[in-house]
Image 1: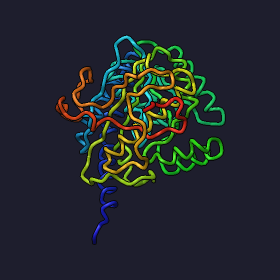
Image 2 (image 1 turned 90 degrees about the vertical axis):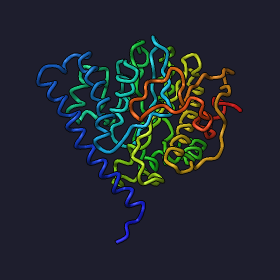
Image 3 (image 1 turned 60 degrees about the vertical axis):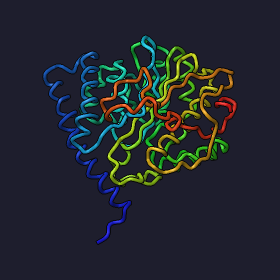
Image 4 (image 1 turned 30 degrees about the vertical axis):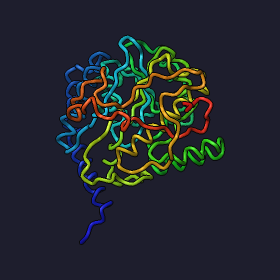
Length: 361
C-alpha cells in the first residue's frame, strides 16, 4: 500500500508528539510533583528556578529523546540588562507556555509574568509552578476577557526590571477554525483589516486593543517578538491548522527566533503601537514561511529599518547569524558563520492595513 507524502509526514510528526508526551511526563511532570511533595515548590523563587531548569531540560534533553531539536541558529539577541521586557509570542501547537518560560526564566534569567486562559493550569505541574508566580490563568467565561485585560494592564504598568511579561497577542492558538472565527469578526468590524488578515497564512492578526494597552503601560520595556514553528506539527494532523505540513518530511526541528526592539524605538501611542505590532507579525509570517519551506501568501511589503509615523528609525535586531550579544546557542547546535549573508534571514513584512504607523519605504 502506498502512503501519500502528506499522510506520511503527519504520521511521523504524530509519533514524535507521542514520544514527547512520554518524555514530558518523565522530565517535567514527575519532577514538579516530587518537588511539591518535598516542599520545594512553595515560594516564588523556588518555582521560578524550577521552571527555568525544567523548561531548559524539556527543550534540550527532552527534545533529543523525542527525536526533535530546538533550532535557534538564527540568533537570539538579548535585551539590555536592567530593563523590563515585554515578549509578544506566537501561539501554535502545544507547549507554548513552556516556551515562554524557557525564554523568560532560562534564556533571559528573569521572572515570568503572564495573563492567559486557564487551560495550561489544568496540567498539575504547571498549576503547582504558577501558583506563587505572577502568572494569571483566567477562567474564560463571559467576564474572562475583562478580568484578563484588567490584570494585563496591572502587570504592564508595574513591570519591574527583572521581569518579562509574556503575552500571546493572537488570543487563541492558530488553527483553521480559529482563523474562520477571527476573519468573520473582522469582516463585521474592520473589513480593511480582514482583507489584510486573509493574506496571513501561518499567524492570526494580533488583537490590537490588548497589544496597544500593554505597550502604552510598559513604557520603559524593551520588546521581543518571538516567532516559532514546528510545535504545531507535533499534533500530527489531529487539528486542522489551515496550512500544509512542512515541505521536508524528515525535518524534525522546532525553530525559534525573536526580534528585539529597544524601549525608546517602540511607538506608545495606541494606534501607532498596534500598527507597529502588525508589521512585526507580518515579518513573523514571512519567517515562518521560509522555515517551513512553503512561500507565504502575501507579496513583497515594506522593508525593515525604515521610520514609523513618529519619524524614528527603530533599532530592531532580528534573527541574524552570530550577532554580538546573542544568547548562547545550546539548543540547535553551533552558531552560523558571522560572515554569512544576514539579509537572507531578515523577514520582509507584508503591508499592514493601517499604513500610518507601519515602517515606511
